[in-house]
Length: 432
Ligand code: SF4
Image (cartoon, rainbow, N blue to C red; front, side, top):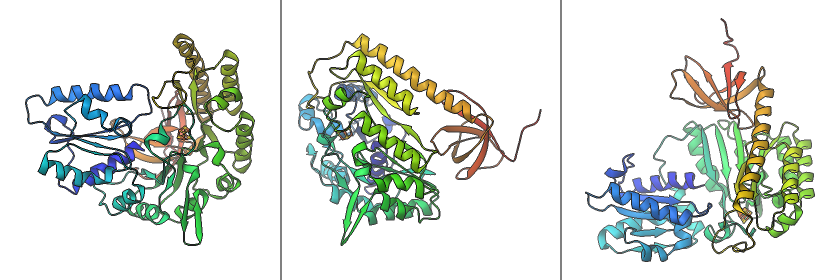
């Protein structure tokens, strides 16, 4: 989501005649768009500000903006800790940056804006000129914030309560990028499956939004992330059967395979409920693959709880998943609960990641000798080589003498490693 926000910040800066430079030492304004999801995010920001100061030592100080979730969480505290920051702006008020920067240029007064103004934000973003050529696969924010309050997570505090963007605003944005060449949309939300927009007497949810997006001829693939298991209903499950454009791949975080730990995390679902969902999705579309998030060493996690997490990974056969050692977020309920020794966490993480990597390698190996459909996203830096992803998001590389960007192609996979597939264009074949 920060990637999406950063693109929008670029578009906003263009409205006040700032153009993006790749050379930080050249910049008259520097914006850090920060993420608060990892531990020590705040300290890292201060350390990065120190590095920037050194780069710009011999020049007039650039205007410095701290944006994103660290800005939201730290607020006024930032001005107390460093004189280098001029403007602090949270993730739900960055649409006001052009006015804030113009104001700073005129008055040279520090400014902080950490309000949750989501309707105003998306209204402003809707009228923005896109300053770059859209990618073949584009991220689109449709929902923000979260009401779930998992005990380890800062999102409800930094992004605020659940908010769903207007369907008209989403479809307008998709129309613009589809007209410019986008072929795949990746719908984003902290709780994307909680999407709900009421328009007069009609209520749109995620399946009905997917239905509308599927009507764009230019859009060939639709994906969404991230979902909470408790927001998965029969209609959404059925969307994986009905919509051929909805890719059979779902990121569905479970975090732990132990009911005891799920309860401590305030996840409000059980392992059994999660497994029932997996069965229902597989029934709707047998080709579906699942990825997940795992937190290792959550306070109270004993060896048997961890073993249950390993069991669920084997049972579901997850691919492409994220796993991290639990790290404390100030202000969340899990802070200062009995921490698991770091050595134990590291060893559990290694065991779990090995299992996930092996799953991925086996899936990749199963594709060798077979044909898989790739949406070609770009040319790589290697001469004649192109990069794309298959329906399950597995990265694939192949060679061609012609520009294939944006095409949906059948690629015959000839080799793989744990992370990537390598193939040939089907009709080209190989000879020796
Ligand atoms: S559902 Fe996701 S975003 Fe919401 S509190 Fe839990 S982990 Fe955070």
